[in-house]
Amino acid sequence: MALQDQIGDALVERREFFRTTGVHREDGSYEVTRRGADSAGNAKVFESFETVRRLYERLPDEFGAEAVGRTGITGSRRHMLVRHFAEHPAFDCEITSRSPLTVAKTDPEPTDATEEERMPEATAD
Image (cartoon, rainbow, N blue to C red; front, side, top):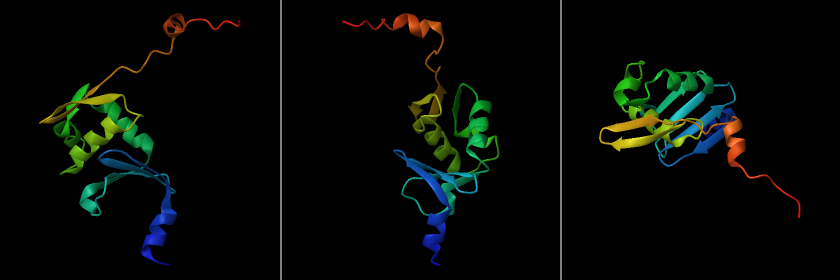
């Protein structure tokens, strides 16, 4: 079996974003790669997507590559992860500065009764 076929068999779900790609693998791991890159220096594999979520939760409300680097992630992977957090819809944050690359966490939309109050009641005519 060719290497490309073996790699393809190991993938379960691949989502491409503007500059990064997230891959949920068959073994439960999650890989973040720089979109269009093909070297190991442009990828970081986590035990699971939940591990990535926990990393994000431990980061401050505003963070950049330096804060990601304090978790043990090195090199250009730090910037790649900052971009991935900003691009992936599971993480409520947005890029606030490109130099230095900085992301700020945002509050998710409220899901309590106040949301219901803003929604008009549907009526049948």
